[in-house]
Length: 116
Image 1: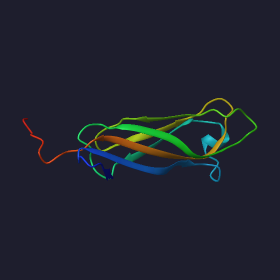
Image 2: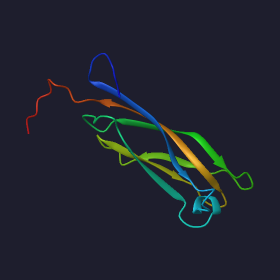
Image 3: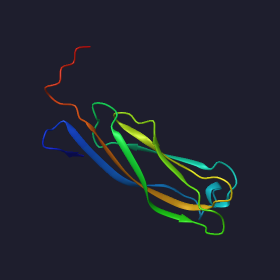
């Protein structure tokens, strides 16, 4: 986790393998079955509120015989983590995917008041 000078804003980032199915003959590679994969990510430290999360493909290994179709998003974002979601459809065959992510948001601060 990186803290900015003001101690209230944090930046966390990472790079994770979402799936690898070419060697096991999984549905993403064969084109049969569920065509969505989810990967849970936990932040190094909790944010005060759900942060803004950006995800991008950092590696993809796809068959070029069919069309290349991919949808990558961040879902279920909370103070402690989120899910990377990769989807494909039709005749696209994907061997493996790695995704980079970055979260930016407010951090808990020692001077914050808890009035609950």
